[in-house]
Length: 515
Image (cartoon, rainbow, N blue to C red):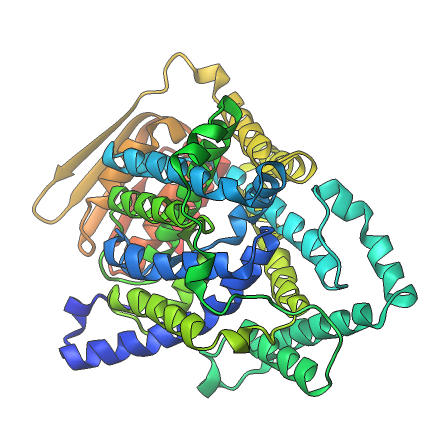
């Protein structure tokens, strides 16, 4: 695991070298994703690059999670695509001004912990649905075609795209070849790359090889179109732009973007915390930073941003120690698009689609639903499947709301009393944390706050004998905390009654405590 700069004992020079090296790796990961996600969102690639620059330089400096890297995220591509289709690209700016404002206010009101209370079944079902939508949408770009307006239409049009490969222009076959080169190279590199080159991302290898093939073979296909100056693509919304779009539906969409971006960011931040032993995330500070970032993206008409686990994990694996690596990666993106726009114009669109086809496929992780079913039974798996189905067949907001409503249905028999008491008793050689009442996502904010304040190391006894209900959301949070604490050298003692040990959620905790 990576550690914070203060804990490593390294000199400032060595810390800078580690951060500098990591920033180059993150830059190489981020470049193809920034452009590809923009294209999947139905906007020019430079919109994604601008978001990557703001996410690196501005949010990197303000973030509550120092090692997390922010930028355009695949999770919002679907909702942005629908927004642009319905309102036009000019609506991006006003939408993000409102969404960023919501996020900043939520952070200032210290609501960051509540986003961590979202059921993992809803989150993973949403991400799987998004993955399917990205996969079937970008599948058509592999054939030099455009995605359809909805997931169902994209799905039904797959045979049409395959038929075009044999009946239409040479450009279709050329684009498909570039996409396949990208996908095969990306997967082969990630499987067989030498250990000495493990930090070079597969997406970069795939895009470079497809671009070289298209250039030297003079393939007839659609290439990325970026302006000579990235500043020419800035689109500052006017007061009339904002007021002209204000409507209950528009504001609801902005709120949905703020909600989903915040949830994805804070879930990513929690995952980042599990990857290193340094400074823990300040969730409210991170939420405020994301709000400022999205507000600035709105002010220049760019894509929305979130904290992104792919770039963040690359940052940590490359040895980053401070927020300087995230900031520098934003500087490298800015320098690249200012000095080498001609190079980006050689990249085939189908190559970026290939990256996103792989990205979308990986978001559909069946391991998550197997885990939920194995440990918690049918209901969480049903929530996952329902969320996924509604995201694909209707829209992202409807899918998430469906999952949240189903999560609440689990609590109906207990709705009269959902109180959870968390008592922390600090003794000389032992800290005892005693939970009483119903441990559900309703009391998650209080539980997370208590667990986050516990020191690592020493002996902690988690007493659950007073718990009368433990839902899968709470069980996952406690299990993750147990595993993280034990990895940091903490002795965690779990106290339960014999009746508890037979239930699925409690077996999950016992498993985490014994690993």
